[in-house]
Length: 120
Length: 166
Image (cartoon, rainbow over all chains, first blue to last red; front, side, top):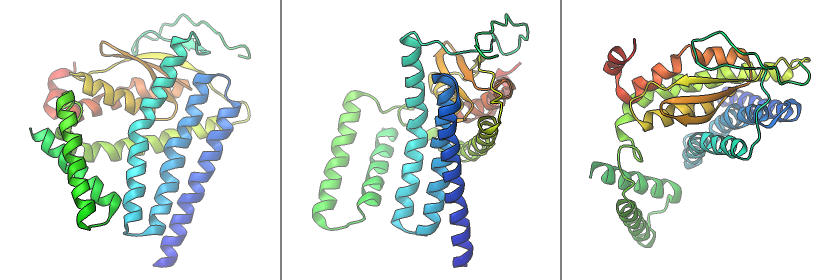
């Protein structure tokens, strides 16, 4: 049983670490600030949740697990607010996202395709 | 009043879980802290169904697992895009309608969108959410309205769905 828990928790921790690295690569590779936020999003969802679940499995039914779960919930509730504030601040400061297409409404498929990507 | 009691209970639980100690001095300090926090919150008039949405507790039990699974799927999609050699991104800005009745619903919907990698909500106004999507696929997935429907079900209950949607 201990072995199963160990294997599972290490798989989760490694999975989280891999996703955190992928998020980091994304933040380097993606072209502009708004796109890079999606890379950061990987780190504070999949990376964070997976690592903390792995750590919780190591801790078992203890106070440590309770605190780990609290941290996960805290980040899940506050993270989107911070990301939204960042995006709003950037827009307010006049940073415009690089877009390959701008769509007006969810249902209309007719688009005025303004290609603003330099390397499209 | 229900909200104030619930806030006090939540704060007391938080104190006990974080301290884990039960000697009289710390318990007294805890009780005092809880009373001060609830009193301040009452004076600031921030304890209502928005600040402390206890009515969502039961329906949240089905919404959270669904959202977490969506987050996992979106993570895999975005990770694939990032690792692809030619970086196949098509940054898109779309406007989606938030079908919820009040601002609490709009907030939960916009936060759920941001929490899902590949989509970030940029602006929320009059029930319209402007979303920046990393790929056309992410934008298309959001446009299906599945998340909108789930959030409406979470905040307004199932009946509102059959009434509200065309």
